[in-house]
Image (tube, rainbow, N blue to C red):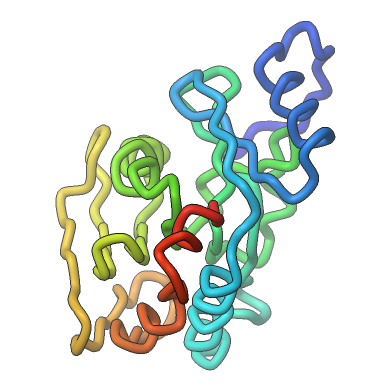
Length: 209
């Protein structure tokens, strides 16, 4: 059951107020609150954005951006553990009625999220560790990580407590079938996705979120 939208005074949400000020002062940056800590990520580099576009295509081709579900970028996910915690996944697959599950601060109840996906950059440790805990605690059914640092694609399923019972890393050359529970059959070509996201130089790896 989703929480109703409730407007709260800024003084009742000091971390969110601080996070919103940071976003106002740093256009294009992503600001999240996870585990009571503010995480700030710089704008994505070009290969990060290209990989994200490539990742959207199989979901759309499978009919998942339609009357039953939507493929969305940068939509806030309210995290149920902390009083002000929220994340902003790179890509999400949500139920089509996700707007009925609005909570606050441009964030939505995790109950309407079928899958979240992150493409790593300079903050790869947050995607590989911190967000694993956060998304598992939010009971997100499927978490996909495109790990550009180590050239792996991770698929995590079956959230249990603060982790996922099933965590499978995939290497270039594999074709990965995502769980049918997302609503359609979707396969990801690990080689092509990692190729699209590969920075031209090592310096560019540090320029995205």
